[in-house]
Image 1 (cartoon, rainbow, N blue to C red):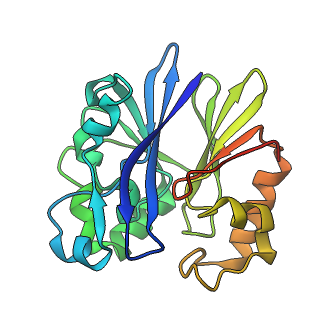
Image 2 (image 1 turned 120 degrees about the vertical axis):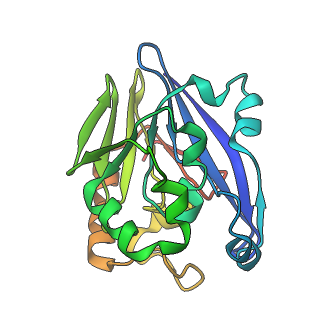
Length: 220
């Protein structure tokens, strides 16, 4: 299964970091999209974060894909830069941890319109689960209570789309020893976050893809 990285936005107020989504080209289930970037219409949020935004459709077109190709959406979590263009894919079900949807409804009133719009079809998960053959979500709480990462089985091993369980390759590599002083918000629960990173490391992924780092780590 091919994994295609989409360049969806840049957050110039936060280390000029990129915002990535990923398309898993599944031979039977069709295109599976992981995270949808930043939405439109919340001018204050866009100004505060100095968002340089892109339409998901434009990012997909660079890879000869269109929103209509997407059959399933997986949100790693429901922060504004990971679910902002969910409505572009309202024809697809959204796989999310039940605890994350509950948290976001409680804590994310400003971007609720981006994920909790009329007609949104949620497939709620309680922990790890298979989404399609060879594609599964693994609960990795800590960044948020309902954060999840996406695992894709391949001939060389597992590829992990880690979401915000680690903002960068350096944080992933260093784990609990990482200097997080420049990265407020990396965890809401430090102990859970540490356990989640240890869980990912223990799976010995072949590659790790990051939402906010263009580097791709090979062989954990």
